Structure formats: structure tokens, C-alpha cells
Length: 114
Image 1 (cartoon, rainbow, N blue to C red):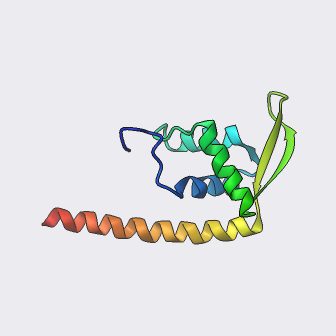
Image 2 (cartoon, helix red, strand yellow):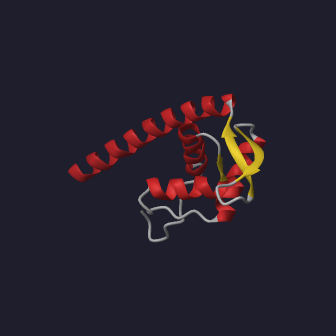
């Protein structure tokens, strides 16, 4: 990726959070961030401020919900879950991402042919 690993295309973090919750079920913010980093093979580094800003945005849109629980290390933590509306949005956003990335790939391949 870019020189600064924290640079994430605007809007893609929300998509990754929704996908993570869809795939793994309820997770706390730290767990979501670590899972995204793990899947990206550490190409992405997500700080707490970034992940929590995304979680607040997604809750305001009602794409995720939150409930207090106890983490693996016995600490109180808010666990987030994807909602029905969030699943619908995830499907829409994933389709858009696939379409856009295909178009960008096509343009880059054609540009090489000069």
C-alpha cells in the first residue's frame, strides 16, 4: 500500500468493519481492528481512534448495534453486531467495490498498453 499504512480509502474501513462483523459475529472494537490487520497481513494498521470513529458512524446509520459484555480478559467491553440493514448495506457496498475495482484494474491494464 502507500508509504503510510494508516491511509485507508475513505469509506473502505466501514465496509471492512461490516464484513468482519458479518463473518465473525459480535466483536469489540479492538478485536475488529486486529482482525482487519491480520487479514490484511499487517498492510493496514488501524488505531483506536480510527476504529471507534467508524463504529460510531455505523451505529448512527443503524448498520451495527452495540451491547456491553465481558471480553476474553474479563474486562467490560462493548460488543458490536451487524444489523439487518447493515447486511443489506454490506451487500450493496461489496458489489460497488467489486465493480469499481474491476474498472480501475481495466484502466490500469489499458494504460500500460499505451
